[in-house]
Length: 360
Image (cartoon, rainbow, N blue to C red; front, top):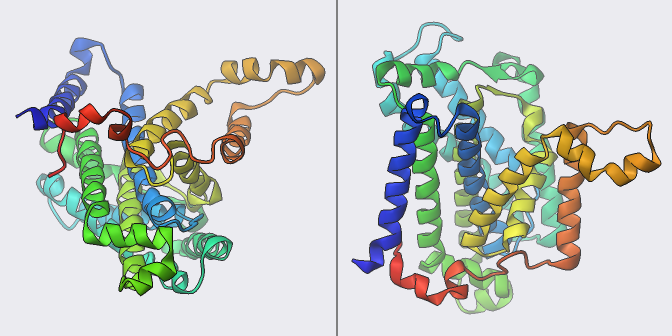
């Protein structure tokens, strides 16, 4: 029973959190803003752990992860509006089906995103490092440009209407549904990745990271491993995109550009390449940092020495945030390229933790 201590504690935490969220006006412990931050933490955990499969476990250099988040967001949003919205005419299903069909819609978005991952997987057969990074950036721009030229889904103006599905679930049964789905998909993502990296496929992926030529000599089908890894990574990113779209209620192609990919890379390198627990911790820390940097007061305090020299300069929190985030990536590469955890897990630092959890 001791082996399941953490699993049971985590399940109880999720149940208590959902109960408090459901009765937030009675407890006055949590509000909609805190709930949104918690949901974005969950989404960032999915994004960080999925990119870690490629950049960490396989040792490739993908710089266009936002492309697959974009694909998942748009596909799931379009399906959601078709099923329960009014943007394209009468909805295909009654609102009572929303809570049952919503996870299927999100999974379909992830599947389409995983198919889009083949655009990167196949070129990776012959390229690595900087060349593959250029290809992933190109794919990112290809997908964004393609969506911007599709007027039927809003083009550069964006797409909305997926909130109808969220309201349909709430109208059927009042409950914090989006928080529920984020917790569920986040948990499944971490469990799936943990199982994958410890499987035969995962060991093959790690072998490619160490030495691709040696892996081929040892009968590892490197091309197959790359396709599986890229598709799994991009599929999970698509799931994160679908959840993000339904929480925000509006998506725009420009929101999934190189800056979004930079966010994902910062989280991976902050936590440590190849470390699943590091990717989870860094996603939590990074989301909290983003919320702190939204405050104009905090930005003014950080830049006090600069504004003292240039008194006429009035820095905007929205602009400075995108100066500080890439700066974090630069500093990480210079002073701690292995990240917080390196390629180790939390249980490597605290071996006794292994007694209290299992992923089986």
